[in-house]
Amino acid sequence: MDSPTETMIARKEGRAGRLTFNRPKALNALDHEMAEAIERALDAWRDDPEVALVVIDAVGDRAFCAGGDIAAIYHQGKAGDFLTGPRFWRAEYRLNAKIKEYPKPVVAFMQGFVMGGGVGVGGHASHRVVGDTTQIAMPETGIGLIPDVGGTLLLARAPGRVGEYLGVTGSRINAADAIYAGFADAYAPELMWPELIAKLVETGDTGALPKGLTPAEKGRLADRRPQIEAGFGGRDMRAVVESLEAAGTKFAEETLAVIRRNSALSEEATLRLVRMTRATPTIREALENEFRFTLRAVEKSDFLEGVRAQLIDKDRTPNWRHSLATLPPALVAEMLAPLPAEWRIDFA
Image (cartoon, rainbow, N blue to C red):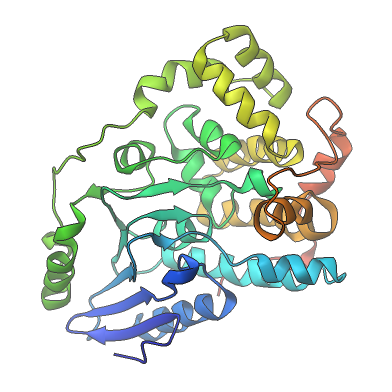
């Protein structure tokens, strides 16, 4: 095994290539160096006959990976650097596609918080295992961003309008709901995970994974589906708000409170991006659609203010530039305009 001081530990064990997030004090937040380490390992193992599959897990009980490490991007943006962030995102998106398209099985064991960049790593694995502590979310609208790292592909493939609901609100879902919404494939009690990983390492066979186990905690999405369908079918966020206001239910009131708290620009863009990706549901299309927004986010969106309020000053009171009532359609169009040729993602 490589040095335990590394934030991403890559090694071969038995028939498996193993990747372990090792930054538990930071909830295993993914930075540029860690993303590059994952990509190097995947490239090395792609044609290695000793590696039959890849296992991704994480040190610590609190998080598989709670998101990308965006504090550095914030400070760079405040200093007038609007390019370093997009360069990181473009490299991260290349990794997300590589995981999704990997020719060998990739098995992710996702405990605790799995958010943002963590979904971009674990959510695109071919075999995604969740447990009783799993809490998955794409909460980017709360920091003035949009669900990226291929998140719109997962949202677009969720049942009905569940993807719009989860993307706009950033709601957290447990293991049962993660399987229902298509963010995970199988449940296993986390006490079983070391044994399961040992079998995968020994055999190189995903047949060792459990089938038919059911989380003790029920999900909520299935019961909420009728209200989600009624509320999130509108052509834009104003129509969504009107539908929820007309419903007048507890669910509608709770959802409206979240919508009014998050960035209006991010919510409108998220609604459109989920539907754009639904029309062409491939990982590369999803990532390039998302990059339209994130390329411009540091300079032109609510991103810097959202990160300030949530992660830097932590006052939780972002001063968004627009509400849904005042949001200029031209700004949404500008944020979602096609990528310039020089910023296309190199998926090689």
